[in-house]
Image 1 (cartoon, one colour):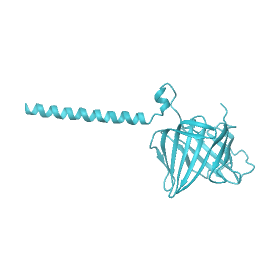
Image 2: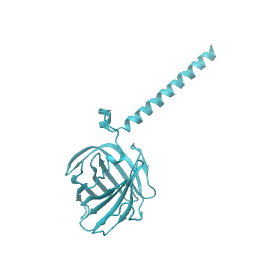
Image 3: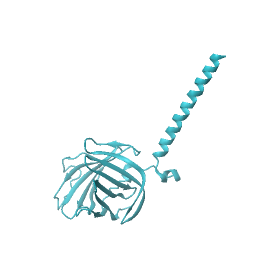
Image 4: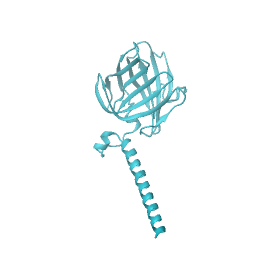
Length: 216
């Protein structure tokens, strides 16, 4: 009788442990689903390029606070295969960036400053000189990448933020941690980057979306 009793207790403890593990796993899954997916499971699961649309002729204008160069504009000049070439101007200089898009990440593979009359560098008229990952899968809390002073991680899947272009809900938030500063970037599905906050001590520099034009 005693042996049966001991086996019964052990079995009960095992079932309890499995139940707790299942509950934890289920909660983790729920935490990694944006609110709009929870309320409408029929919506398609978002992909990386939903948060970083790079169709040709897309453009964004950002209003800045805290620094004269915090205001800037972006425009997709050329797109070919999985590469896009972007022109960015902040009133002081004009730069060229090339991004490579894959299921695993969105990466800046080329950057050049002082390019006031950019030519089409796609697909093979440039030499990669950068390896900055902007977004990385899987799209879940805690996904991190980078090293040293360039650590980046997904810190929220479902945050709202106000901009001159309006309020954006269900944003993806990326936290970048440096030695003396922290940067938060907010990405909205179908629009892309809608806000960037640079924080260092008591100083804060904000660039937030004023208007955008994205072909549908």
